[in-house]
Image 1: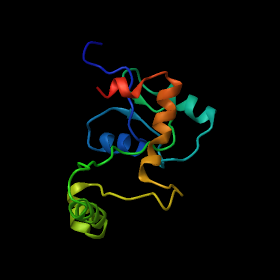
Image 2: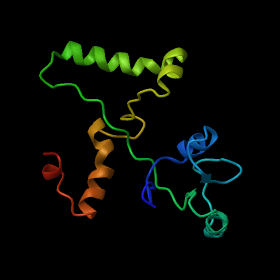
Image 3: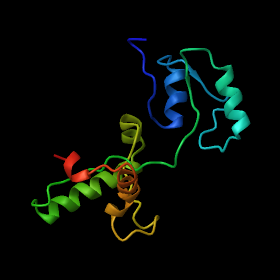
Length: 139
């Protein structure tokens, strides 16, 4: 068991992708539908049928916000706005999306937030439940 991982976290769609690429042995649902609510019986049956040593998904949480993109606050506002606009335009360029495999969004309005920083409150709440001091962890 020296070179194996006992547990890990990723998003469900990534597990199916890694399996298709032959990078992992994964026991997933045949329909490959991500985000679909599964019954306890379905998950138990999948887990019980999974060969020893394969990865099996036993549960998933709501999406966790991605790592934020940060720009030094002391830089000129014009520069910060140019960076923001450039990143948010990536989604409009199919070639860039294909090359990057991702794009940036500003969910502030969609989520009804006053600021983008509020998008990370769920992580702060989890840290508090785990009694983690984010100031101390941040160095």
